[in-house]
Image 1: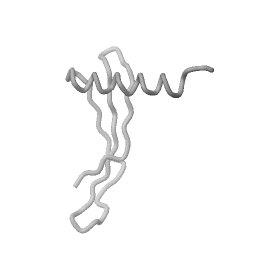
Image 2: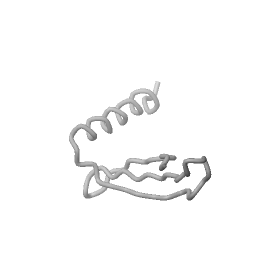
Image 3: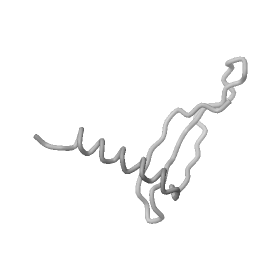
Image 4: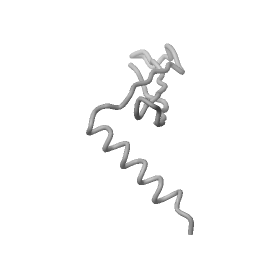
Length: 66
């Protein structure tokens, strides 16, 4: 099975790019591989709404100056 270990969103000329890493683990729990990578451009409107919500949350809760 594949287990997501991290992901990052950043804005490029093509749009919102999501990169991710994952590990592969056997049915017995043995590590098959780790630090595998993938990426894609977010084009699904529902996904873009979720990305925007996370961006707003971070801006409102961590980037506002008092």
